[in-house]
Length: 592
Ligand code: ATP
Image 1 (cartoon, rainbow, N blue to C red):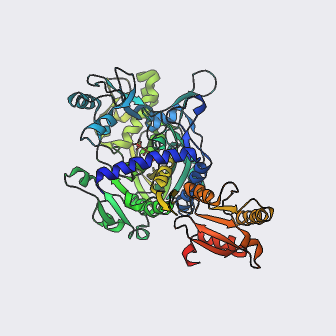
Image 2 (cartoon, rainbow, N blue to C red):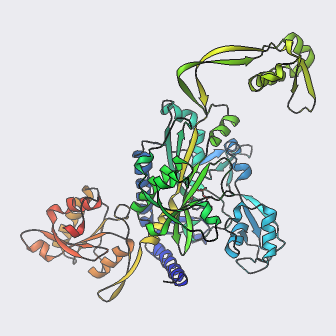
Image 3 (cartoon, protein in one colour):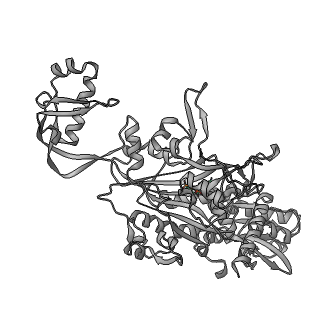
């Protein structure tokens, strides 16, 4: 299929999917009764169940199986948190407003969508303005020229007031991660002050996106599933052996920068050996994530890991890769995997009164030299008055940092907010270097962060599962969802409105629910219509109770599989056990 045709077909799939999602209760724009509001979506009964199953699968893999702790922190946090994290100053997107229709757009998206630039987000604002003028780019909504319009940095955080009045500003968290970092001083106690340990959180995040688009792919309120794994960079190593044979499609920065560059099919082990994935922790989580994405239903032929280009990567991040899925011929970011060094904890350590460090005990106590001061206050007091305390602090810091400053007759210091240099006789500082035996040191742990978006994953799972075929001469639409995440696992139907059939069907529903399966009961319309309804929402199996069920000595029912539409007669007695085994992946329908 040509790229063009493929993309057209995909485009139609997206349109059909969004229509199906609304009609059948997957997702729809919220507050429709009041005209709807951009960037906010509600998940209907099917969507909420699918999303819940995806979250459970994530929890099982990234919290339970990895032995990590899960927390649930508030979504509103006070301003100092975001001062420390850098979000207040730097969590901006580039905004350009149309001079004609007044619509706001992301300037970097306007550039990327209409020029060869692939990473306009990393360009400085004046350069983006130049590119817009040079290429005579126009407003995507009305076509008016955007040349000469100012591009502005727009902070994406939603602001609110905590309590009455406006003296205590708060923000809706733009990522779940800060809830984990801020609680580190307490969380490290739960981990018995031992590295490495991991903390996960699944919850809502809020970003006042300039132009939310493509239904639940870019919204203003969405769900993230994040893991912060805290390590000692000198001691801890990931269990790379367990993932070294995982085959992945990688799109490294070097290939993106090269004109004829492309994706590489490679194992995690090879990618580490060849230095393609620079950080072993990141490599480990890519190796864990790939099979997990496959298990929840992402089509592995439409999935890759793309390395951030140097301009995209935060200065403190050693290596960063995104998981991407192909939708409508475009790649969308599903998750980010970053090695963030000690950046986040150091910032909170600096800005807050708490300690964001771990005490690392040495195998053997060490003897070290320590430079200290014991200033003569009878000299500093009259000389510096109220600033004498600051002078002491400055001398202490200098002794720790640069003992050579005390080698001459005088030591020079500068006080904060003063440009003047003060000279203090070294004999008045009480400077000395002494030996000390220490048992360990306080270190700021490094962190590796796999950060998953749940909504984009739900969209991908539905898009990749969307199928159309023909059954008995009729067109059919079905969702080939993985049984593990399908909102409903089995539909139960009495063939006709008949008390005897309905009584058996009711019992079967109870049995299946007792076995932990999610079941829907449907007795309206002809049986073909009922099958189509379940196919369309992706229910893997349907059970029909017919006259054979109640007339024959051995009670059996028809079980129909969604994808093949194959039907088999199975004894009611074993039904719950058999279907539960299929759900667990321990049995195949075709082997029955
Ligand atoms: P983008 O570049 O697409 O705006 P991002 O790089 O800012 O995304 P991260 O901060 O890395 O995203 O967030 C982690 C994950 O959260 C993303 O991979 C994505 O799946 C999800 N996510 C981020 N922003 C949104 C949004 N506005 N709507 C839905 N999901 C989002």
